[in-house]
Image (cartoon, rainbow over all chains, first blue to last red):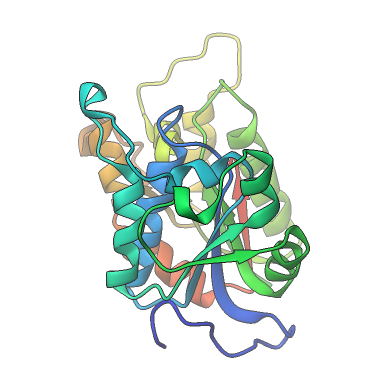
Length: 133
Length: 117
């Protein structure tokens, strides 16, 4: 199985793929960074993976996250680096970006694909496993 | 049905750990196979053998009893970040890496997350 790519369908007609969904903003809780760590690990184990950012989760991809005083890494850069680990694209819910008056130009330099909220529902229905963070 | 479980919350603060425990017991009673429970983030705290809960349910003991019937693995890195060393772990639970989670993901028919977003 190729890391990051969608897999074949299982007996229930679900795509053999894990969908990690980021709904929380960075830094307010540990969830975003732990979700990132899980995504990184699944890619390392060649698990077919999709990653989607929805609601406040879209804030994880903002470029120029200045967090030096907090002693925490730049999560935006970290997520952008998933591409070099084999993740083809970062899916971002366009409606949630719009609601926060953000555009793709505000996001980190990485292959971002905008999807509709409707498409997110489809992704969730199609994926064999959905893990929310 | 083969079921994998991910627990993302610690004991007592929320009810995710209780729900995961009761779900697992009910699923086993109905003849389903629980491939394992992977304790991630604060979920690793349910593995703390030193939990004392006078007059209340002891969630660490509950999971330790469950550990006889199903594999329960605490994420080693999460445990390290929380000062949870091997000798703090309840005897029927284990510390492990992401490989244990991946194996569960690959073998399960259904995968349930408790205490997440």
